[in-house]
Length: 195
Length: 160
Image (cartoon, rainbow over all chains, first blue to last red; front, side, top):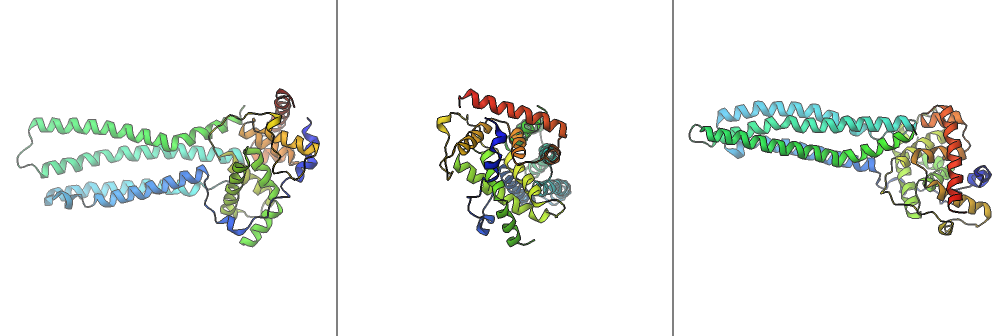
């Protein structure tokens, strides 16, 4: 079969297709990149909500004035760190729509941005851990009627380490599950340019 | 840059939508889904179309980039000349039958090779294809020759 002989028929392909109507422009996209954007948006909203609820921890925990003040110092640090990361997430979200570049460039751009985003997501999760420990410690101290025994301190440290390791594993697993798959597929396509 | 202008231009070039969907999707249902995805991406990208290039060149890039990143679960495609469906073709001439075989064989190419052979069939020069794909024109020429050989092998393998 000589594919050059098919040119004439190829040029007529699609003529029988119905004309596009404006209703079709309003249909929702199901593209994997759109799905990624939707996941990002939902996570963004969830994290914002979690940070907003965290502001009420002293109220819910019945913290003393001193512990409340200490809590809000660390909460302010949490908010500032979060603003930095959310700005990065938002910029990435907006850049995901760029399909007009030449193909190799478009693929590399999405792939590199996604890899940076995955690492940024993980580091944001890891950064929150010390703040969670502090909140838990303040809660414990606030509800103790006497000085913590060394057993309690070791227990606290032990629990913190175990929950931290579990949280880190969960964050890495989650980031790779949600975002890593697309990054892998993009890289496989990029490799095809080199074959 | 109105909706009306956009629809007019898309309908002038609707063949691109059809051919890209046939290259990148095997079943009629998947082709329809892919055409819809490409259309939505074109409409979303339209505000960024700055008239510095031809509308068709811009449409090619968005369509191909959308199709290439439209990952579906990888099902093994079983090629057999008996399975070539011509249900959406209005005629059944020998040339159209060969074109159907071509589409079927193209399903066995990787995503980048599909884009290259698509552009080749569209009549773009090596330099134009290189600009669209972000490759060198030399690389494009070598790859297209290999793809043509590969397609011949695929068709022979299934004894068309």
